[in-house]
Amino acid sequence: MTEADRVAKVLETLKTAAHSPTHAALPILNALIGLVQADGEAPLEVEEARSTAFMAVCEIGKALHRGQPAGHLWARAIDATERGKSLAG
Image 1: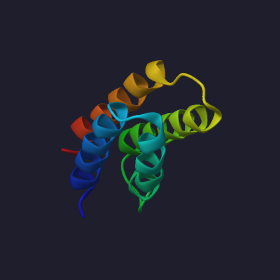
Image 2: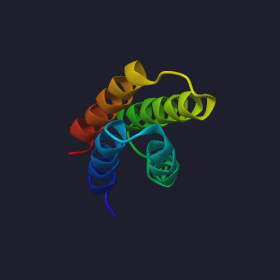
Image 3: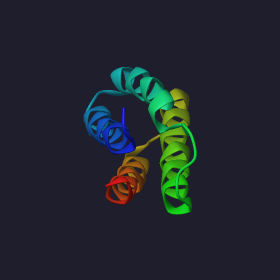
Image 4: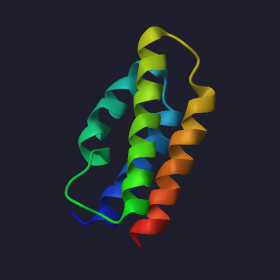
């Protein structure tokens, strides 16, 4: 799977999870971890976008797990992933 394919899949899945009930969103996010983790070297800008997206997904997961509001976190994760998509081609 190319970097562009991975990022597109993450973006699609994030948007689905954002519109899902909390009990359904958490398992969806857990399935993303393998896709947002680094898989080989990439240009610094791509690595930075990937890292930002990874951390944003983790923050959403923590908030959902703790029963805290995560509304504001979804936009950050989606924005970081869209930035990564633009860099990946």
